[in-house]
Length: 102
Image 1 (tube, helix red, strand yellow):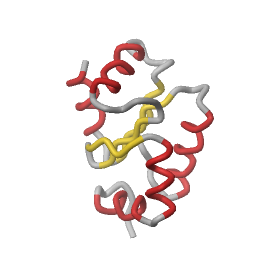
Image 2 (tube, helix red, strand yellow):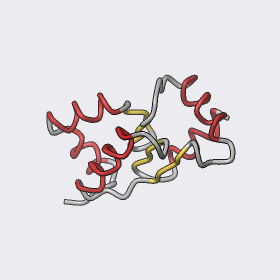
Image 3 (cartoon, rainbow, N blue to C red):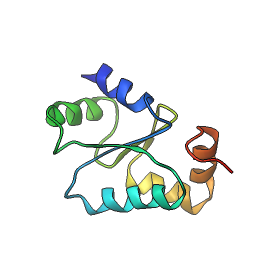
C-alpha cells in the first residue's frame, strides 16, 4: 500500500490526503484553492481502501491528515503547511512544482 500512496502522491503537482469530517483538512484545501492550485484530493473516509492508505501514510512519516504532498514529496500536515504559507514559501513550492503559474 506504500507504493499506492507514492503513486497517488506523484500523479499531480499537489496532492492532499484528507478526511471529509476534518475541519483542518477543509481549511488546507481552501488555502490551496485560494492560492490558485487544484490539488488532487483523496478523502480517506470515502475511499474503498482508505484505512489501508491511512496506515501506509503513517508508515511513510505522515502522522495525521491532512497529509500534503507537493511535487511528489511529503511536505507535512496542517501545522507545517500553515507555517510554510506564513513565511511565503508554500506559494514558491507550488510554483516550482507547477501546481500554480505566475
